[in-house]
Image (cartoon, rainbow, N blue to C red; front, side, top):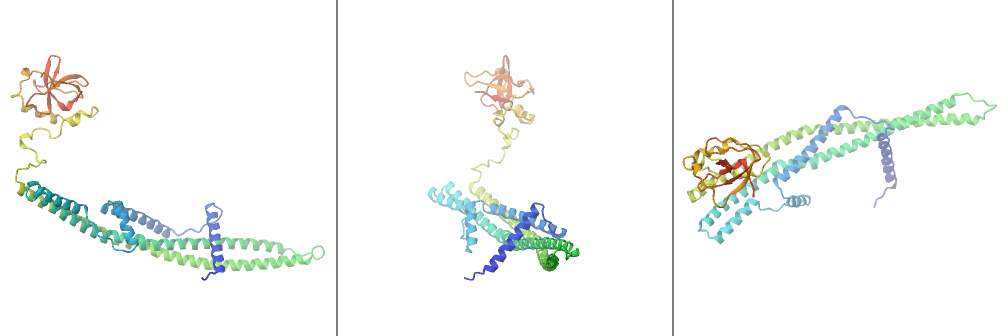
Length: 405
């Protein structure tokens, strides 16, 4: 094994001097060479690009593969440079379960045949999802990953090298400054003429020798400074060129983003088309035997779609709209309040949540926070109850009440 002790010692010395320079800069005890404004802006822009690209990349991974275990598995396959095994999508798995269930329930039964139809479409949806994931990974995720693991690593390496060159330059500047101060001090001590009677000539000779030594040290420090400045300028130019390449990276990522959006649009359009076909197949197979729960019955179009009981448990909620209780016009001819008698059982107490003004003589006006007795009658609209307060009686909207146990 070739072990170069001199090189190791030299590298350790350079590392130590850089560490001392860096520490003194942080403590404000040493001067620091500042980068030019253009390079500083490029560095800030590069850091911004890296941070946001990393966030977009990670979140896109989560969007395409929500399962963290699967993402970790794919990460290890990529690091081992092995092909990622094909994974069944959730839609394909659901479709297969439906097909298997149809076999047990009987393909000839209405439920079994419907399971077969829906299962086949679910598998087709899963296949569309698989194609979308593959396209997005190639056209969008791969370019982002290549930038983070390739271009940005190169830029980071050159930036670290630039920082080391800057530290070396500042060390040379500090060394030259100290050498010049020492040279000036030695020159001042040697300017006085020697007194050969009271002072020994040896002191004068030593002063002249020290001045010459410091002059040599200054020349050496100036040469090292020139070399360090040249290396720093060269490295700054290399770093600047790499950072200016971020603009082309933005252009490339813009193109990839358009491809990702196109892939999303194609995927969702395909899913929409498949679901429309599935609805048509189910409608033609079932006819009108199974009503659509999302279609409002025209005979009840005058009534509120929302359940009135969803509001009774919210005492602090705002007063419901009058449009929700306008259905009382459906029953005045079929229900005469004066003929209504309370049942023997089934009456309850209710707390009034909001003031309510009766729209006609069949209704009972309500006052907030009062207690009334309520009950229902056969054939009544479920949004309404019969309310009694003393000798007064009339219909009251359920949405204005909190039923008490």
